[in-house]
Amino acid sequence: MWPVLLLSGALLSMSSGVKPPEYSEKSLCDLWAGAQCELAKCGENAAERCLEESKRCRHRSYVVVQPDHAAKVSECAKALLKLKCGDAMPQECADVIGP
Image (cartoon, rainbow, N blue to C red; front, side, top):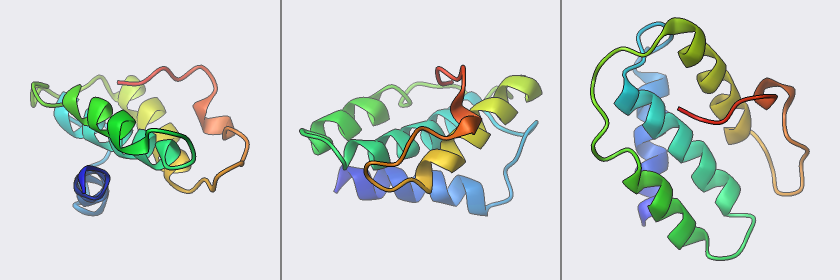
């Protein structure tokens, strides 16, 4: 259930028109966590890993993130959401650590 809720929040952020430079720390973290949850589905302990990702976003602020950082992280997260198990890491994620 957590992966579905987290992914729903991430997709809501994407579909609501939020885009760089408008990402807050919270919305960018939620988008990133949703992408990490999708990746976790391919491995063991997916529910636990997804829950850990979502916990990291709980106390994030609504302060706007620097546009360059937001663009880099969001492009990677969106590319990760499109991956299927076994796919190579997308080019958009080179040198991206997360929000």
